[in-house]
Length: 271
Ligand code: GLN
Image (cartoon, rainbow, N blue to C red; front, top):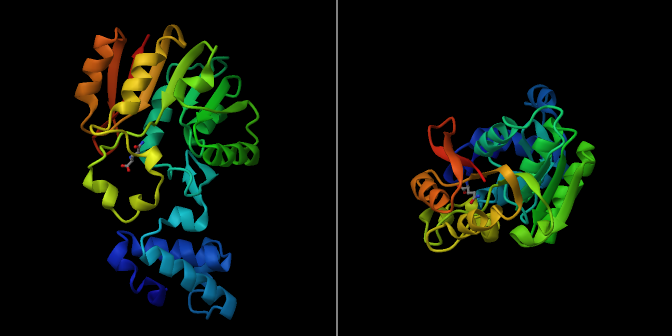
């Protein structure tokens, strides 16, 4: 393990955890194997596989792309470079979206820009009688989301390719949720090693980062039933502008929510 750590410190804020996860992946170990095999030498094939992974990690490739998986809402999700890597913060959006939906509700839910399917699948898991529509403009992303749904046995999710509302034409929705791209095109954070590997289309949204959010806000009312909900994630410094935008468009009961780090990351409102 000590050996595996060398070099990771330079690029990763979590070198030990990364090394453990990559050793487990390369050697097909589980956590208990990792402890008992700690002093044991790896066989040639394991070592070769591990070296390859460590090398890619040292160049900044996110661990989730190296292992092809990330946990979200206690579900193991497949991820590829076609999808954003689900973030823990996004579980806040799932939590808030679940609040108005009764356990046995039969609502129609749309997750626009679903990526790996994280939000749609979490909602489908928690609300088995709802109909969930998961959309994405990227067929490669949607293929991953479909695979995830299949593995998790979530059969009440429909997948549709299309740009935002084009994928839900003709639908009347009870709630629209989204983790749209919201990073400003010139944000220095996009140069960070890990983020560079993620799809720009899932991260960046115009000069002020608000193009996708404006599009969602300006069009959602046409697809929501009266009193239907719009809820989405946004950047920590965007709540003020978003509140003004939603007010101007006539949304009601606009509320923003803080994540565990204290950042306002989710805004919800009613048609
Ligand atoms: N939270 C992500 C990041 O900081 C951005 C996700 C998004 O744009 N939806 O990289």
